[in-house]
Length: 324
Image (cartoon, rainbow, N blue to C red):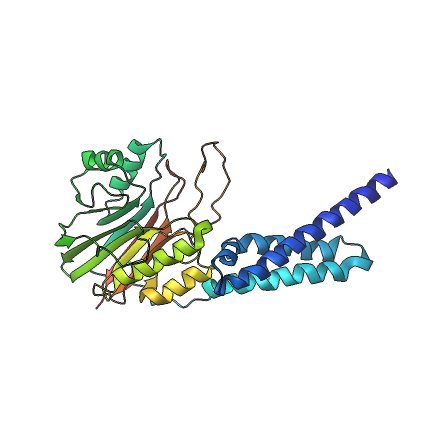
């Protein structure tokens, strides 16, 4: 029995050291995301590196052999510091003042990647309609989800045959994104211009490729920024599945480049339920990749995550109030 305990303790020490080393090295390499799209892939998983490093530090303080305690504290501590450096800028990011719940000129918006393999389109469409939102932006759209929504409510639709669609109570004044910027890949983009009692405003929806194609994703960001510059930004709203987390350097750069304020803050939206053809499930979302931006004329009244439906994403529900 004593030999078993010694062997078990030794195996745990090896696993803790290996895990701590992985978390520390991954967090340090992720710092290279400032200059490398490949290194930036690791930055998306910063919460994992932080959690793993915290476990190693706890092990060092509570269970590690005294002679090895300093080793484990060093490995775990490096991971905690490097991973925290990725996450803290998002958590400490200043936000504009909130609008009161009874603020006038409110606009309710739903951002939702409904997923191309969504098997519950009827329930998904019913939930979308039940939100009574003024604007609904969906990605991985299809004629089937479009028709399911329109069967339940007479929305106006922008880009009704596109991968990104915008549904609205208001009739769009015009629509369509700028056609092209030479040399940069174009992400699916939909755009509508609307007018309500507060004035005219532009809504855009976008869907980026995965971060594993980091260089393409960053080029898509440049292409989108170029499109945004064609419209007034003070009352602009931009939403989408950006497939990038707020602790990535790509997202931080685009936050500055867009000239808009991101109103979602560390809101985890992926995955929801099964996220592969094999039915793989996780108990909670671990990547905040769906975002909503708005210009300075909008105050944020509320931001919340919707329920799990038939998609691998959770919807995002944002209420804004216009205060020019």
